Length: 126
Image 1 (cartoon, one colour):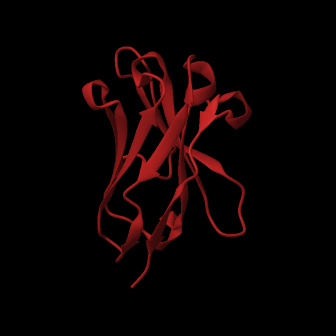
Image 2 (image 1 turned 45 degrees about the horizontal axis):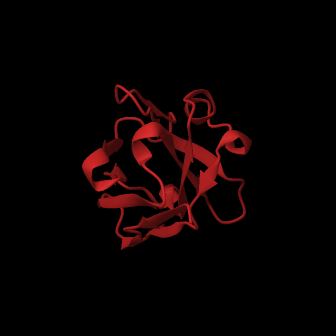
């Protein structure tokens, strides 16, 4: 069964950090561009970051650029999202998604992403 599983969410104070993980089972992440998306309460899901399958090309939403870093460890079949300087507006359920092409991922086109995880909740609050 092909599956993506997110982990690492939790509650953190403003200015704090979290690292999210996206682990794959049933397939190899090497061949896929991986995107992180998030859905805040009462809002539509939006793209956060993307990393290509080859070359590690990355893309960030303007709201997280300079604070979040996406990376991948193909040996562990896992993609990470390091989130620093967290703000209350970063509160959301974070999802990872996979697609074999880079186009949909890098343009945050959700309908083009082939596999999705179930999400992990990040709460930034004092």
